[in-house]
Length: 88
Image: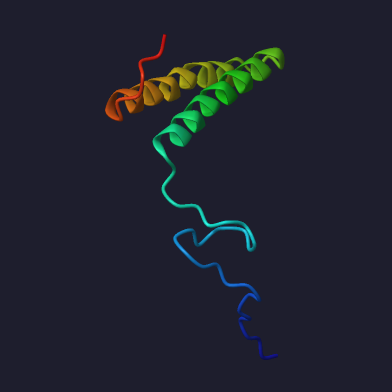
């Protein structure tokens, strides 16, 4: 049986080769967008840690709860690097 590799009907274009066809291509995010993404990441890590605590998965909970401040530190460093207004 002969098999060929078919090319997809829609080829991604631009800098994001894994983009979903039809979605806008993502360029380098602005510093504020990156900062917001880092803070969202920290919040998701905290929520994941709390969820693991509720399910008595202490090792997972410790990992996620200790990983959250890393994202906050990255966001803080980004603010200093890009000279945003300091956080209160």
